[in-house]
Image 1: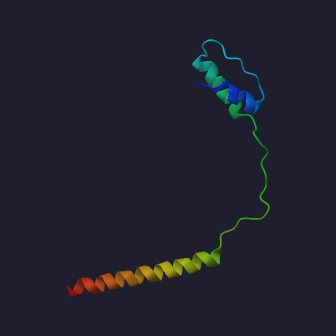
Image 2 (image 1 turned 90 degrees about the vertical axis):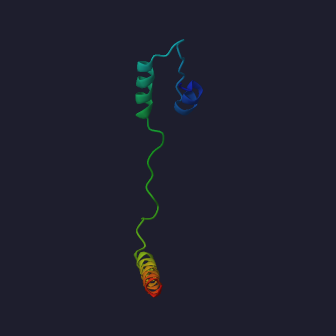
Image 3 (image 1 turned 45 degrees about the vertical axis):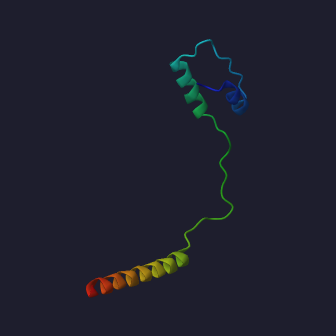
Length: 80
């Protein structure tokens, strides 16, 4: 069910519901409200970029830890 009070506050349009709102008119209203602009798009103040050095360091550390773990598992699994 549509919340007409919230629509009035958000859009500023006074919508008076009829006794029974049909599904077609409800869908038409939803499509109309979907096309409204809520706020203007804003550009970020600084450019976002991947931190390449951090990714390389973390990848090297995690790869080294994974390889040591595999070597230890293989070493102790052969002895038993």
